[in-house]
Amino acid sequence: MRFTLPRDVYYGEDSLAELKHIKGHKAIIVTGGHAMQKFGFLKTVEEYLKEAGLEVRTFEGVENDPTIGTVMRGAEAMREFEPDWIVALGGGSPIDAAKAMWVFYEYPDSKFEDLVAGKWPELRTKARFIAIGSTSGTATEVTAFAVITDPDKGIKYPLANYEITPDIAIVDPELPQTMPKNTTAFTGMDALTHATEAYVSLFHSDFTDPLALHAIDMILKNMLPSYDGDKSARANMHYAQCMAGMAFSNALLGITHSLAHKTGAAFSTGHVPHGEANAMYLPHVIEFNSKDPTTLKRYAHIADFLHLGGNTDEEKVENYIAEIRKLNKAMGIPDGLKDFGVHEDEFLEKLPEIAHNAVLDACTPENPRKVDDETMAKILKCCYYNTKVDF
Ligand SMILES: NC(=O)c1ccc[n+]([C@@H]2O[C@H](COP(=O)([O-])OP(=O)(O)OC[C@H]3O[C@@H](n4cnc5c(N)ncnc54)[C@H](O)[C@@H]3O)[C@@H](O)[C@H]2O)c1
Ligand SMILES: [Zn+2]
Picture 1 (spheres, rainbow, N blue to C red):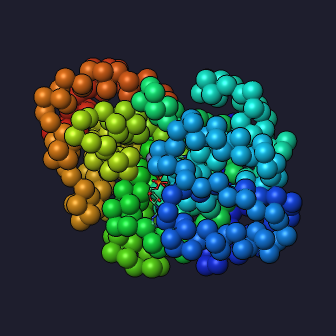
Picture 2 (cartoon, rainbow, N blue to C red):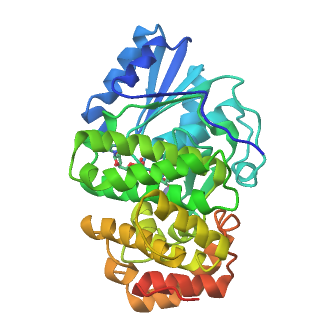
Picture 3 (cartoon, protein in one colour):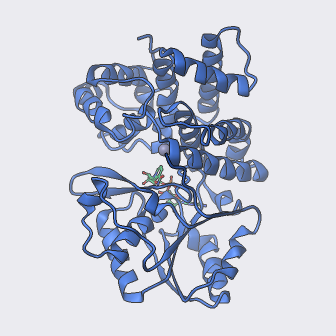
């Protein structure tokens, strides 16, 4: 068994300034489109690294949901510049892209298919990795995952290996202050889903449980004030999502994520954002999983930890689900895919295929209750019509 985290997590006000103390020669900053430049964070990062005596180059323009092509272009830029530090700055997209670039920088002959299949080379022969998160949800600054899209196949591949767990994570609460409201809501609910799924995952452990529970508690207390722009609540959400990430990087997830992955790009009515999908599906997945007696007790323990009340375990779990629904409602997250705007005909036509793909998703094996194609389709139907899972 293994529990892996970055060697250092710098957090708190002004933790970005730790960059001034990095020892090395050359740093490449990998970042996204405009946000980091617009709000001045990119410039600050460049200045701090220069102050540390490093030569700095920037690879900009990583798109949202980064593609294999971008990863290869970034790796090429790294091979040319030969940095000994990779500094990824932004949301999940640029940080995930930089993690994959790192592999192809160090091993240009690697095959993407091998990484997907779990065959990984040993990293840190050329560079180490600093991740600076600017959204409060994916926690990719501390996780062993990178999600890369193959646009030709229209598939998102989750790469998973402790090799890409960053060496240093910087969790500076100043960065997420500029997030738009929708992003705050979706990424926050993604983090709540990470912590909840990690707590009941088949791979949960005594090492991951405290992180998951404390993250859930912090998220329930801070989600709405953070959504409304409260500065300290936003900082707390930034820390809580990071703890949720520490938990799920080691305990893995469950079928809320399997369904979110496979419905994200499935419908002609438009993209279903990852965190919004999780927020809509989580209550139904809890209803399904809590039919398993051991898992029921674990969800009930979450409710106890939050002092939600309830006389029986079933009542406690219902109270936890009610809390999640309350958050969704307050932030304008729809009750289900129907309410979200997905057409019924298209949904029913695609349902068997989506359910089949969700069963095959990397997050399904660790879900505490086994699920086949037919059951997954029934759960997803409940997520569409917002009906109770009673099977
Ligand atoms: N690696 C993991 O463990 C993991 C986990 C979950 C999801 N993901 C992946 O991460 C990606 C999503 O990441 P994300 O939700 O962080 O969003 P993102 O990185 O795609 O960013 C979303 C948008 O927010 C903007 N933005 C980022 N920070 C901002 C800030 N502080 N102020 C204003 N705007 C800001 C970006 O410019 C972008 O337009 C997806 O590809 C998803 O599949 C990865
Ligand atoms: Zn997620």
